[in-house]
Length: 137
Image (cartoon, rainbow, N blue to C red; front, side, top):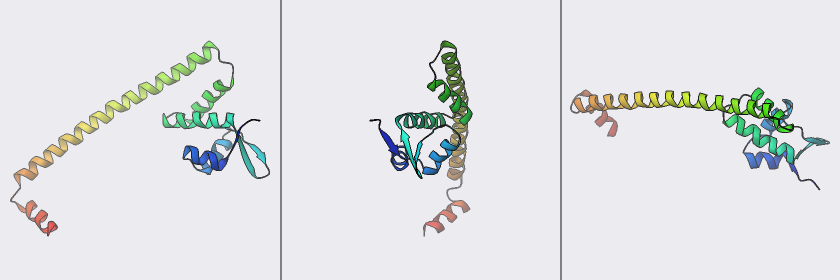
């Protein structure tokens, strides 16, 4: 007998809402079986949910995830694997660019904190300090 899962089990396991799983179903990314109003998810659906959530976490669009899932469903050939590898390299490059931008922003914020600290030190006994003392009282 093949293992199956309810929507409740999967929402709990993956910390997603039922609405999210229904959205993925509407998008054709998963295809649970129906028994009346109840959705029954297969091991295949569960595996696809793992891939979808991983793809989303890594910043892939739903179209890119769909493309990857189609590769996952097929017998992979060299061209398909090379295509998947290229997509992964593109995502790494995008993350590396974002990391550089984030590092620059962090550096700017740290310099701004130093400037504020210097100004606070220069105004210890000035009006700024009195405001601080009044707030502490």
